[in-house]
Image (cartoon, rainbow, N blue to C red; front, side, top):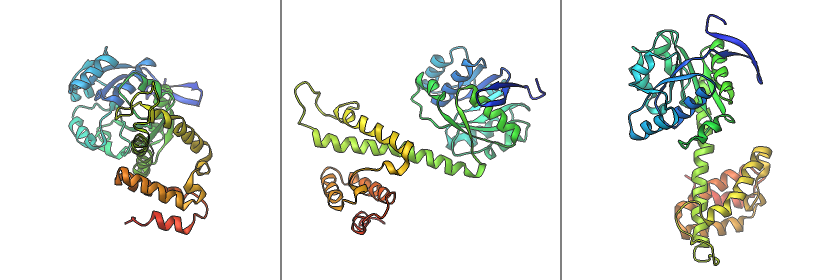
Length: 315
């Protein structure tokens, strides 16, 4: 074992410093914090304490980390060798400021905010803490499946030096994830890319479901449930295999996976789509127009009349 508390052990990704068993504290017991806490406990770290205030957080702490003591954030920080700050990006700075007097020198402090690197942890680093940014590129529901998903997730990691990168990578590998280095100055771009892909996918699919519901409502066959606003219905079942295949094809083939009227340069079909969507909801038309324009720019030599049609309402 080295002086830093780490010993060299081989793993599937090569020789990385494998952490000794650490006493972990988590601020707070949100979806991300409880998922990471459960993942660390599965590899024999001890989540000794967790901060939780809201009824939802207290419930998650009780369900996911039942052996952890619920304490105030400063008390969690004071007794932890590894402190996980699993709070939203917007409140991270305030939480760090509140913990400056509680974090002990030598504590590993890792936040999970995607948009920030380790610069935000400077007040704690000045007190002798090891600053890490460990962001799981994954969406969380609050259930036990979140911890399972971490085993297949990539984590954007940023550290102040090579020792920090080794520590961060070892922790990620222990949880079953894949560490990916993100430069400090690239954190906003990294976070924007993930938000653009995941969050806007939700908006895109929600719009597609709304349009499809309008198209098929009242046409249900005997035995089919009525089309309504509840999720998981007929419209979602129709879209699921198509969207799943499109996502997989895109991840494997890039923009070459693009199909449909924009890829074919069929301006008349796109114009008909715009008219039909406008009858349902003008907002659907605006979203379709914007995404079709982006799709056209992913095709070689899109027709000029198609670009003109899609740019009509562009600012």
